[in-house]
Amino acid sequence: MKNRLFLFAISALLALAVLCVPPAASASISVTLADSVSCSGGYTTVRWTVEGDELSKYYVLAQPEGNTGVQQDYFLVGESKGHSIEGKGLLPGRKYSVYVCNESGRVLGWKMYTLPEAELFSDGKLKDTSVTITAEPVKLKKGGNEAKETKKIKQLDAAEIMKGLDDGSMEYGFKYTMKMPQLAKKRSFLITVAFESPDGFLFTEAAQEQEFRSANGYETLWFYMIGDRFFSSLYSTTGNIPSGEYKIHLYWNGMFVRTTYFRIN
Image (cartoon, rainbow, N blue to C red):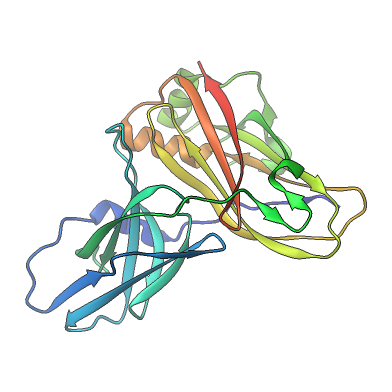
């Protein structure tokens, strides 16, 4: 049986990202992030120490750091009642600025990290080369049913994407399909899908655990629509949807599976 993958929902606390401001002098609390992060199975653990008054909850944000100078968006890694957090969505081999904030978005401490490079995906006899990926461009009326109303299109066009975002009429993205051989037994993988623009804008669209079942023949899993939040974030952050070659990066359990390429006119 085919399974639909559901896009993970970002908490409303993502609104903190727009409030995030540089650290301010404070006599009551000081946060110092550890010199490095630890990564396992696609999850990244960030740790910090606190001097002064403890908070009941800390919010952790991350922002990719590119080499091209393009403005990058923040995203919420999560919230913690202690001095560490295990989050998903940070990509192997990439550089991030990580911020620890209070509930109003005030930055209490930050540090830049470069994550370890990813190994090629391997799980027993299942390898990165065992997985077939297809990415078909699609469009969907704003608020439409992804499973029933998504329509395939021949080519993505930058002007059309921006118009759809400006007037709120249409969303654009991909039906993204993963096909792999049957498994000897059921097991789960953390599936991470990220989009990257020609000028290096990086956005993690999905990061979620998915159970792969033992099945006859092949198992196929897909997103009816993915990439729409990437285009929205790219446009709102940079003010543009550039033409050129884009990338879709896929990781399972933090291991690299495939990069798929597409063009926007």
